[in-house]
Every structure is written in C-alpha cells, then in structure tokens.
Length: 176
Image 1: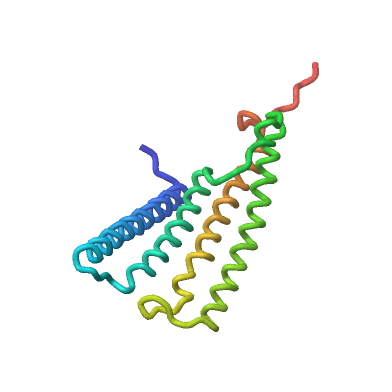
Image 2: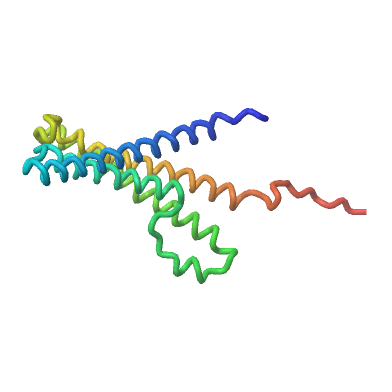
C-alpha cells in the first residue's frame, strides 16, 4: 500500500477533528437539554447557566454545520440557471460562483473579525464569567473555514478548466 501524501492526510485529519467536535457539541447539547428538562420536571429548578449555554452551543453547531455543508458541497444553492445551461458553460459558471463565494466569505470573515475585536474592546462578560468575545469567536472561525473550502473548490475549478482532457498534452502531428 502506498503512502498517503501530506495534503490529503492533513485534510482528512481536519475533517475528522471538525466532525468529532461537531458530534461533541451535539452530544453536549442533548445531554444538557435532557438534564434541564429532568431538573425542571422533577425538582422544579434548573441550572441558571444551562439555557444561555445551550443557545451558544446551537450557534456554534449551526456555524460549524455550515462549514461541513460547504465542505461537502451541500450548502443551499439556487441552481435554476445551472440546470438549464449547456454542459460547456457549467464549469465556467461554477468557477464564477466559487469566485463570488470567495469574495463574499472574505468580506464576512473580515466583518466577523471586526465584530469580535469590538466585542473584545467594548464588550463585557457573559456566560460562565467569560468575555463575550470568546463566545463569538465562532463567526470569524467558521467564515474563514468556509472561505478555505471555497478557495479549494476554486483551485479545482481552475485545474479542471485549464487541464487537457485525459490529463495528457497533445503533440503536434508530424507532416509527411
């Protein structure tokens, strides 16, 4: 069996880490919600910090779910024009869409960085005595990871468009 190259190995490790962290978040959300329900039902009380924490966990899992959806190319897309377009144009349309998506996610990443920076400067403390900006770090992180996935898709688009069919260079025919 041959060795796996460093690029695919790193990509696979990142995939496992993200998927594992997302599963951990979902497990924590389910466990904490069940605990809250049980405490409220049987003891007429609950944990004061559980509901705000659940809201943050939902936010984090939603943003990380968007990263996974982008990675798997299963994000929301309006595909009417692509469906009706001729096959020769579809790779160019995909290139344009991925380029546009890169520009949008770059803007969103920058805006999220500014937001978190302002939270760090002007924000107060939030849940569990942590600064509020810590809970909002998911925004720049998720948008950056989505940007990375769109950049990788853009690179694949360019490779697909500018490579020869079959991956071989054509040689000029010899004239007799």
